[in-house]
Image (cartoon, rainbow, N blue to C red; front, side, top):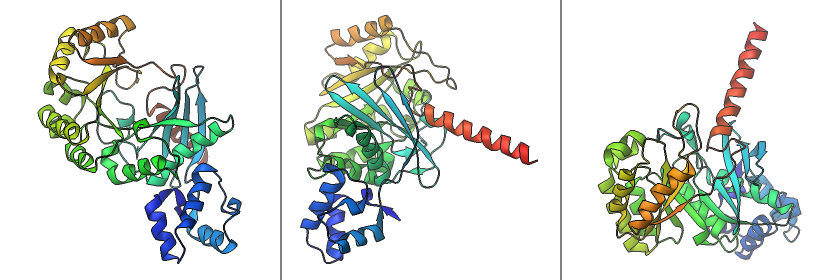
Length: 357
């Protein structure tokens, strides 16, 4: 049975019309889902019994089950969910001075194969549905409701490549942004991509006000192709041309994500190359301390080394920040908790098989 979170406002309007209902019913239902945040159709008390029964007949609520939660001393909370078909996925809530932000996964596994990323240790099994992305946000908001707090920001930067699941991701952000949904402002919503050029161009034509972040991580094609196989399909020149179309069409500032890998992409030469590549663009660089993944062997730079890179970019008039580290005392890197749970399940099955033998 389909989760009701799969329906955007326009899709729910169509569903209501198909049932001979007036549009104001959709306003009522959306209010119960996202403003009042009930998790039982019978709790929608201003709907007729007939309406509630129709909803129960066609829909369920959250398609995710919480498996585990890790809470860091800095307030960062990592959630591990299981889907109806047994797949595992993660979300992370981070606490900032400006509010609470949730990082959402868009796929089960990832096929992008970035050399440093825990998410890519398991290949993509499938795209997440709109409901499975909305469900992540609703589960985190349900946690915050216990203390009377609200999510203020959403970033689609978890496991998976969002633009490889384009339609579902757009439906997801449209729902959490909708003024009858969670009403999270468009400029508080960020979608990250490793550089799928055709989808960047499609996103440009949509004239959305959502933020676009690009995972760059290298200033030249040779190094970027080693770190990020997507660069072989869409090299830097093609990527930068697409991003110039985006900024022209939307007049929006870009974010470039750049993970600093010790001895790999962190030298002064790399910083100067990066400055040259980005000069003149309406953009800023977000330097990210690396969360080590045992299987990859990359190491993070020190704060002092990061500052050298930062200072070079500043002197070259490139807007730049260093991301504050979150969740160092838990499985911080995206995908790590999921992988740990998968190994645990595999070990349990192995033990069971040995016992049965």
